[in-house]
Length: 83
Length: 205
Image 1: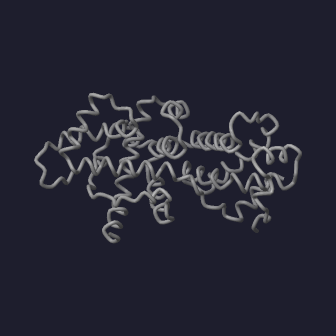
Image 2: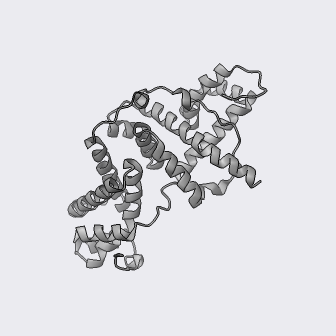
Image 3: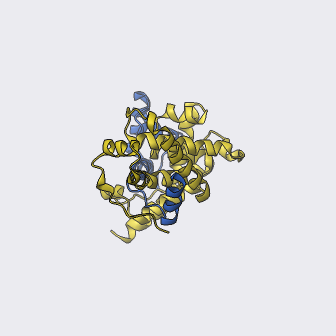
């Protein structure tokens, strides 16, 4: 990790990274949520990781909204195979 | 040779398309392929990472769909039904492959390289979800670069929207393993996108 200028424990950040996913998915138990939120309040780097991890997941959720058209030769082959 | 040009709106809705398919209306099959094949292919390509295998999944999916149409009960939408068949065909193909086992891939623990290294904020952009083509290419590339065991879980859970339990059942692994692999995959994708999005937001304040 390349944390600069923060005084808190990097090991703590590493431990909490493992919980970010459950937190994002709303599956982290309440007591652990509170601990994590307390850490987030003090740790800008972990806030960035949480925010950008959330953005990554949202991008994935929208990935199938506009699939590219089939290559024309592929479409022709599929149609021919169904006749 | 390009496929025949056809107006996708000749059938008012899925029920009309389905009725036309059942009476073997010649335009209906073309319409079915034009409407649903792009996403079936995109998903197959993402799951297999190979254009030839994706084409094979696309073909077997539509053959199964056409065979099973008479018994399709309409409990789900036509699209949901077709995409489910496509996912099953894709996973079946992956299972038939020789297993490509790498120690790193099977470890259901966070790996050192997955510990975050990028701490630059991304510019807040609610429109980003509309996905410009460059970002789409970046994320597809990052997904393709994931080890297969992580890629399949990320695709099923986060792109195709299966639950943890459904994903575990499809892959024959525990829900706990699904969660760890999803987390590892998401962290790798975040890291891959961070270089691109942080640099871009600096260039375009």
